[in-house]
Length: 67
Image (cartoon, rainbow, N blue to C red):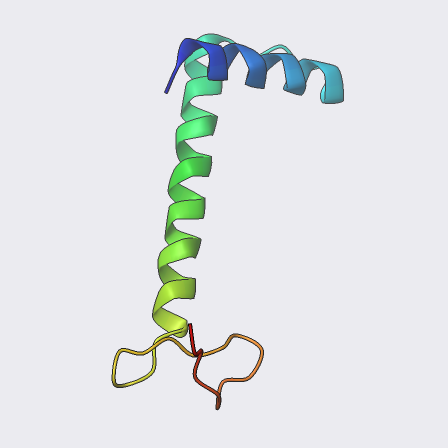
């Protein structure tokens, strides 16, 4: 994670909540968020696959995507 990302995250947290985060805490929170969204992406991908490995429309589980 870049220093710029960490500094920007700390600034947003301070602006939105008034809390001041040290670098280590901000880096841990960001790493946890990345891990969380990575897991959500894996779950969504798995749920969008049918038994033959084709993607299924999230709006209509019975209709396959044509793209």
